[in-house]
Length: 293
Image (tube, rainbow, N blue to C red):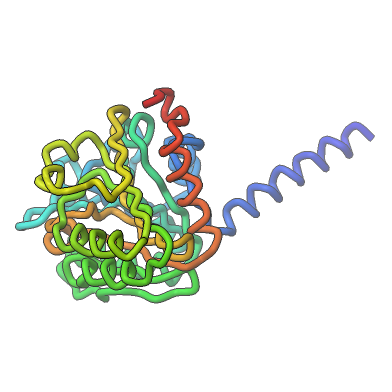
């Protein structure tokens, strides 16, 4: 009987793991251990592709991964062009993608405020793999991919600034913006007009905002929170609790037009609600990575 209960417990644990690995999930450093999540997925992968501005292979325990990055490391393709390689993603065994605002190093996964989304889709994995091939082998990638999960856009090929602004024009009640860097004047002008029409504008930025030219412009009609510590590295937008745009791109000219970035737009209720909850956690000053700001 005792053995039967032991087998039953093992079976249930395996079932829970299978369920977890079968559905897309959203993770935030405010409530989740991003390093553990990434490590667990990597431990199950035989063929990982890792792309990010900064990668620490030793920290991640990477051995045979294909890597592309901006900050040079041994064994990786190093990106050199006018814009930065600023996207952050992993493709695991051509069926799982880990994507978000976090670089794959210790500070980003353990200290900074970041998010990761895990997709289980061969279609999405193929799109992300094509971006790696574009960087390394100069093959022509698709500029965007539309799926059941939402739509992905590749910068600088897609005009994501237009995607953001077209989405903002749909706002009737409120806009949440959470971005490490916010300097784009067209986005700012759109927000000012929406504010004059009665739309509430809430912005969370990092202390980096102190150096932005927008800081000197009239902000009286916006609700703005500057996070002093830890580093606030999110990049996302929520409109009326109905539409989410997130990814690697900051709200800057470079992020929208020059860097290699990936942006994800969705109306999926679970994704949108997760990011609304994250915005509210930060806004209310909950403990984040062990530090209250």
